[in-house]
Amino acid sequence: MTTFRIACIPGDGIGTEVTPAACEVLEAVGARHDLRFQFEEFDWSCERYTREGAMMPEDGLDRLAEHDAILLGAVGYPGVPDHVSLWGLLIPVRRAFDQYVNLRPVRVFDGVPGPLRDAAGTDLVIVRENTEGEYSTVGGRMFTGTPQEFAVQEAVFTRRGISRVVDYALDLAEERGRTLTSATKSNGLIHSMPFWDQIVEERCAERPSVTWDSEHVDALAAKLVLDPRRYDVIVASNLFGDILSDLAAGVAGSIGIAPSGNIDPERRHPSMFEPVHGSAPDIAGQGIADPLGAVWAAALMLDHLGHDDAATEVTDAMSRLLLDGPRTPDLGGTATTTEVTRALVDLL
Ligand code: NAI
Ligand code: MG
Image 1 (spheres, rainbow, N blue to C red):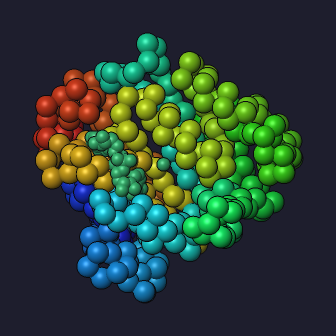
Image 2: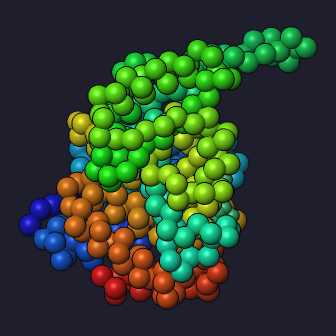
Image 3: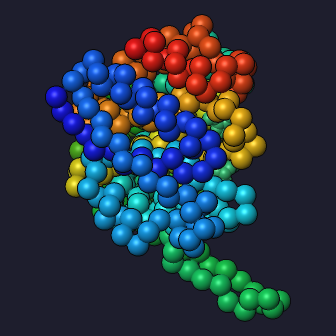
């Protein structure tokens, strides 16, 4: 019996509805693989922020560090600015634990109605740089409230940061046996993106087994809609990867299914797994949130913890469920979160 210590941060809104579903599925699949999960729950959220003035306690990162992995629901609450929730919890965790890969698989499952005429069979992974790039604290504002007012926001690209995320994407492309596409914009961003391109080229030159290509992110966005099946692994900077992965999740039919892993590939720190979606205040409290994004995120966690067989069982059960099982309203059904979770656990 292997025991994993998992920190659970359900967060706000539907985060608190889908995280228990993910835990339930983990327990069900764990029972078949001699895995035990010891969940410790933390109430860190925007709700806590309005109560206590901080998203998490001062020793929050130290407490998370004692765990094997982190499961997060979503944070965000009407009345609390989104940059507070992001910079008060998610970004500090990603940076303190050097989770430099943000991994976002996208699949079009049989039976899921997508917005596109023909995207069936789409199966790709976006590898987003997760600790530097365009999401930086370098910059500032001056002359506030005057006609000369301005803001400067610097992007930070380092040789180390680009190399390691590209190497991760190359490993993944090699494992999946297909191709790598790098998202660039070297025609517009004339310092950072030529540097990105240069390092991508250097790293790829050392990996002749992987066929690779570089595309401007705007054209890539259009092609992701027109022909998503042509892509396998896409590597992108923090901002480009953020936008492309939500676009790709939309192509797959619902943001409610999409998962994301914030990964420290060197395993020095716990990695954090979460659904791509937010706290969805518009449907929170109704019990109809799709739990599959959180469940798939839990499967990514199993894979990361070295149990890819258990992870595959979860995604296989999801595929079967999506074919003809109950579904939540985001996928055109009428089932509740609990009913979908129950059906999935039964399949396992
Ligand atoms: P959202 O993802 O919460 O919702 C977008 C739309 O998708 C809504 O119509 C919602 O009902 C629907 N939706 C999302 N997840 C669903 C699910 N599991 N099942 C069924 N329908 C689902 O994004 P939005 O509205 O932009 O943001 C709401 C709040 O969430 C904001 O405060 C935002 O900052 C926060 N947020 C937090 C994230 C995180 O914690 N990682 C990520 C994205 C947004
Ligand atoms: Mg996003």
